[in-house]
Length: 269
Ligand code: 2HA
Ligand code: ZN
Image 1 (spheres, rainbow, N blue to C red):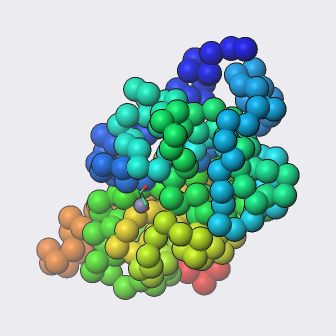
Image 2 (cartoon, rainbow, N blue to C red):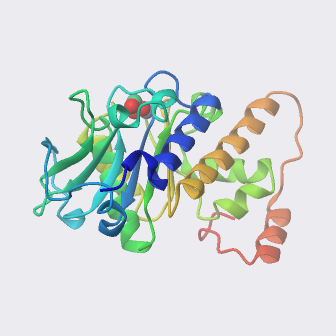
């Protein structure tokens, strides 16, 4: 058996978490990551037939039966993931009926997965229906996105259009827009399922007054999506209330869409 601490996936998730912590998006134990792995990736590093513990789920995910995920632990700090991966991460396989998880490695202090596990698994389930390469869900508390939800209507079309108007890259990186859910109590199956519904045709979701979750086929892709939404929100928060603004108007946005041959969500431009 090879040393899992030397695997690419442990290094990648630790590096991503450390970056996010440094950006100030994951104060204390804020935020969580899940990274879907294949059996072939996992097998060299751990005995996939040995269940350390069974971890419960509040709802069943039969669509994800048998799938492997590396998931950050509940109450764990992003800044510590690369320092002590075995305590702060868990490697799980969803049971054959989708009703619980087998812990195969990690959570070495007796811990369990993030309290947002239902949102993560719901997001994977939905994204996999439209993108078979989907592997990553990242949840964070980017300061400017959260700030913007304090002063801006929780309307996903208007929220998206305003971000598109902030800098040229936004419409290029998220032409299908940003989903928005009104404030809800988090860390439960209810918000998990409401989020999953949004992920049926969005890759990024804002939770008003809380944070933001991005999905992608790699950690870089999901992280880059979060970064771009946060950049748009940062510019908005910098300029709001400071007098007349230019904004990238619809004609200019159409020029970008044409130049980059982008498919924008119908009726949003
Ligand atoms: O893990 O971010 O939404 C803490 C959270 C809950
Ligand atoms: Zn959160």
